[in-house]
Amino acid sequence: MLRISHVSKLFHAGSPDEKIALTDINLHLNSGDFITVIGSNGAGKSTLMNMISGVLKPDIGNILIDGNDITNLPEHKRSRWIGRVFQDPMAGTAPHMTIEENLAMAYSRGQNRGLHIGVSSKRRTLFKEQLSRLGIGLEDRLRAKVGTLSGGERQALSLLMATFTKPQILLLDEHTAALDPARAELVTRLTQNIVSELNLTTLMVTHNMEQAIRLGNRLIMMDGGKIILDVNESVKADLTMEHLLGEFERISGHKLADDRVVLG
Ligand SMILES: Nc1ncnc2c1ncn2[C@@H]1O[C@H](COP(=O)(O)OP(=O)(O)OP(=O)(O)O)[C@@H](O)[C@H]1O
Image (cartoon, rainbow, N blue to C red; front, side):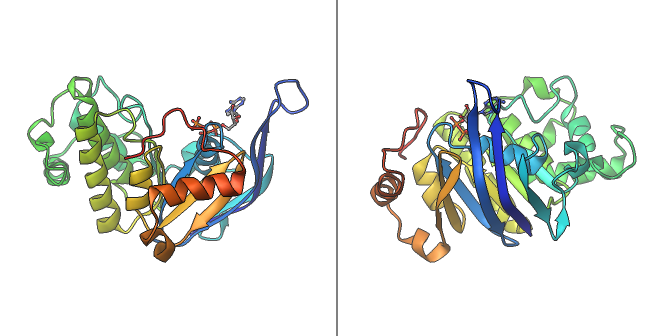
């Protein structure tokens, strides 16, 4: 499905500000994998997501989806295969457009038919159906401006929009971190439902250790631009938070330095 081979990234190479973001990353996602990603501050998690979505290009190495090399494909040309939800609820939606216009935009993404924001009644019925699956009443607010929604409602909508066209890969970039605990739990539950219903191949960065252990079928840990641990489903099933933090310390030689870590 997704294969990342020998990917490295250095920022400001050769200058005093030089930063190693990724070093020889090798990662293979099987179809339907739901991988949680944890790591210390500056470990390279966001850079990895940016590489996959095409925001950044690796200095060396390759990224393949289903055997197709997308390393040099610009972000907008990958968007039909890749859905992404960011930490910032403002990032995934257009605030001055209505819910149905936002959905129409997501629906036509990558279909080479220009930007269609007109909404036919058939399309509106589909949007209502999809929104009602979220279970938070957004199906009755199709013509509400997205800027009037709460952070949690906006993240739920962003999630729906990112998965509307069943992307090959779903990238979740700390997408519940900016929400209060109840909203975060709601969006987490919706995420689990959508990922399992659509059998989406998913990579989710989180600072919440409990969430990292509970969700998905695989867990990777990053530190200093490297993947230092890759845990499969059976090992993950028996993981505890203490064990996970202990493993981090044992392999990296230092404590998990994460100013936003949530222990559960
Ligand atoms: N645009 C950039 N210019 C310069 N350095 C950068 C840039 N983006 C990231 N870095 C550096 O690359 C390294 C990896 O950063 P990245 O944001 O990927 O880490 P992260 O694991 O997402 O961290 P955090 O959990 O703190 O958000 C860090 O040292 C960071 O300072």
